[in-house]
Image (tube, rainbow, N blue to C red):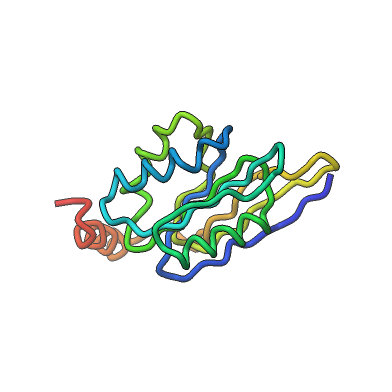
Length: 160
């Protein structure tokens, strides 16, 4: 077995959801879940099929994000993994709908941070071992940091 580190390249204003599912139907079901959760949502979705032709399956509402999701997942090449790239929407807005899709097994991360994926490769194929989401912690928040956090959540409309 060989371990590899694959970075997910994305624009700074794009959020992502990286997960695992179990069936080709995932592509259409996730598409329906996303557009049902946020009307007018802009996203690109790609899914690594892990049997038969083993293609990267794809869909979306934003051509640029679709293209980026497809090339990213072809490079990642991990069976039954999916990537959703979101613009002008946060993962928190769609995660309940994504988790409710019957094929979804797990979510590795949902973030706007830089992400590196730890991939194991064997003679059979590739799988995701874990993710590195953002930076290492640099300290413990102080009073001003608490105030800033609370202000940010209210500015985004998540708290009153």
